[in-house]
Image (cartoon, rainbow, N blue to C red; front, top):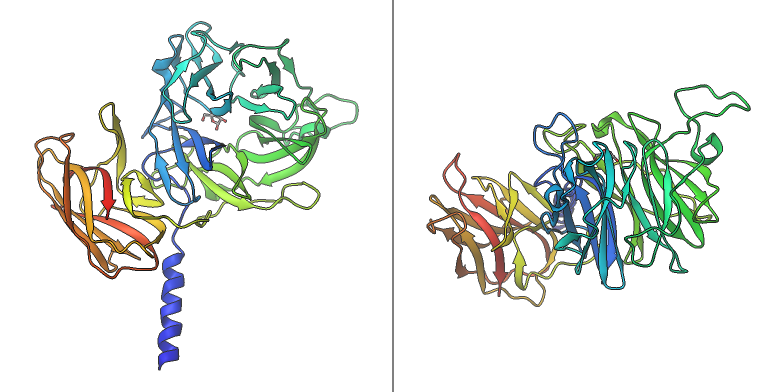
Length: 457
Ligand code: FUB
């Protein structure tokens, strides 16, 4: 009997553990992920597809961070079209890099100076900003194909900026990261360098467009340079080329993420990085509810380089990356840190920063791999605001209906940004590692309250 109970309990546990992790941001549509590691934290810089868009009418860039690859903190939007006096539209694929304690945020956007796309650079003192247009004018103002900058600093200190669709350009950056050392170069394209175009049958001795399309990601590993990019035209897959030098010549190495209708997005855009000893492949799909080609969402897969440095085929999954560390619930945590959510969104204000919003009855957030050992919670507190109705926050382990850790009543506080810190007793005895759910309850239909941060003591 005991054995049967154990088997059933284990089966239930494995079912509970099999929740989705991709797309790993559910509170809005996010695109074009560009990972960066700084001080044991992985940051991802993204674009933001507007709700109900019929094109890439994107207005801002966003930043998310994690220390455990499962629980992500939303840092909101530290940079938007409005921060570039010369820009008027299309906040497309970004990348940020640190040099000499400053953070350089490269972005493509539509320039009112030329009526075409251009590349801007903003600078900040922290990975989450604030950022300021470093030049007050475009860094590279060329033509419609000036999009998707990728930046890399080589071991000898030389920085490179690559970009372009359908041409691939590069330029050496000066140490200041905001000016060029030399002229912009166009990379020669060939089937040998970037794979054959799928549109035209290749004939010997003729020049064709290669499969390179857009979204380059430039990086280095074990002395080899990698150019990873969206390929094959629309619909895109992700392919890569390698070189012994940062400026080529490039050798086409094959497909990394094949095109798949199941991702529901005709574009794809990758970023590859090592973090805490493991390698990760970031990309985007249209797989959030209501998603599609203009409503994309970022996702991530773990992978291992082959022994010869080549990259294996990587398929999009719902399972994504499991937590690589435990989350310590003791102390104060932002409500916009989560592994998964349903129903909620985030907003930001100058006074509060980012907070959880659009909370309705039955919505929830979940944190993965939360370790209560040694915590012995006695109190649960939360900073909340509600213009009118209020509701409750149920803190539960393992599922939306799992054992209760605490229930906090949230009254109307007199305004949607009139914050009150409220506390309640926590159930004693919670121990071990659990997924932690915050389930929101109240009247059916209306927005109930906003939620800024929580505390377990
Ligand atoms: O997100 C807008 C554009 O779509 C990006 O610049 C491209 O890489 C593609 O993902």
